[in-house]
Image (cartoon, rainbow, N blue to C red; front, side, top):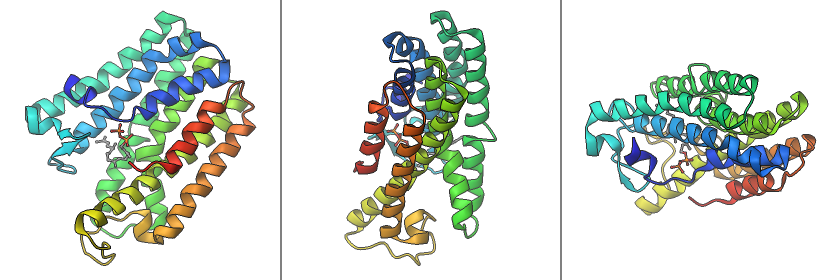
Length: 264
Ligand code: GRG
């Protein structure tokens, strides 16, 4: 569990939890109360990466610049490390109540987490992705996969922070729109960076008619249209953020700008 948690990573989801709490409340104490939830979402994200890397799924040898969990500890321990992280995340959420979150807020966060990380959320997105590998995937199906596999944990992060910060129902709605669009833009940018990485490795453009080519936004709509879409979704996300009328929105705007321009 510690091997994969400490392997690095951008910590995007925890940063979103803390930034959303601060954006709503303008209060540093909200960030402290949100800290166990920031840790919880990184545990969930890390478990999903460990399981995604297993031979039965993506069968990857490297993650975050290090050998994958199962390469070091074997498949059985990698499955258990993921299970342990998933379970411990729910314990971590309860710690925010010990630090000052109200029981109602903690309960709402547990409910969001079980939905957005579970079958209606990330797990469902991953299942759709696995099934999609067996046939042609339409743009509509691909959007479904991205929205659940990737956006749902981003949505959880922003909503959880916003709840800790004391967001109103209207603010929660706008922040959910912000996170959904940001998550989608993030995943499309990931697809773009993957393709650029593959082309650099091969030293030539990746052929779109290669049979085992992964179905992504660049594959379906082309590189230029994908880049434009990332830009449009980011602008729409920032617009939703404006509508939330937050006390301190600057850091969330900066994260959206950073993600659009990131190169890794
Ligand atoms: C196995 C239930 C289950 C789910 C797996 C996360 C995931 C779902 C699959 C990993 C493959 C992938 C490309 C997922 C899309 C989400 C994504 C871009 C993950 C990588 O997130 P980053 O870039 O990773 O935030 P770091 O290492 O920076 O934390």
